[in-house]
Image (cartoon, rainbow, N blue to C red; front, side, top):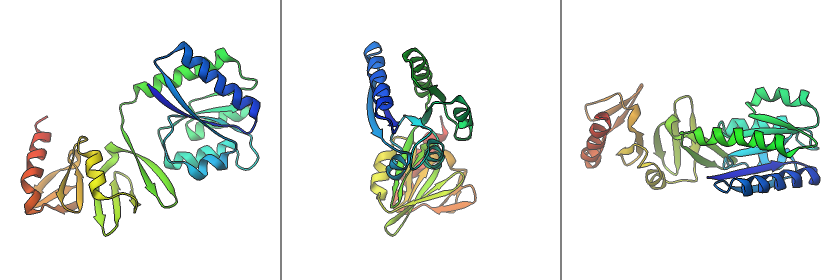
Length: 236
């Protein structure tokens, strides 16, 4: 399994220790392959965060943005990434419940303790069945569970992702790109401007598909394919 790891640590010695421990763990467990990126402060990872990590080792005390603040920012964009705090004092790590931190390791880091934390995280990652998509925006990116997307609407050069609880907009992707990415996940176009997650369809009436309180038109050219996929989905 490939695991993408960020090390956010301003102390070179500690960062190098974490890196070497990950390398050691990989040699002991060759079925796991780690890709590691180092950040020297919380603001660095927050500024360029794109939701593409599985695990973050986060130092709590850093110069420009402390680890807790960085984790809070990351949680706004990514609900699934695992976070392990690295700290000198356990009392700081206990606050990690606010950002749903998986664990914490105390400095100076000992390999056996580190290994047990990493094993727990990997077990959690392997147990996740949810699939995600990273939505790039002008000011950053947000990782969204595919199961949370009700439908995607194209308005001019902007895509609006209608989620269960909110909406997200992007000008980076095209509808064609989204259709190619999601056509194996139970999505189908009901017209040229709407890509629908079929599991949210409550019914159809007068050439419209019903998704909660929204009514989306079913175009003549796409009606047959849409209805075939919908019926196939409903027969599961």
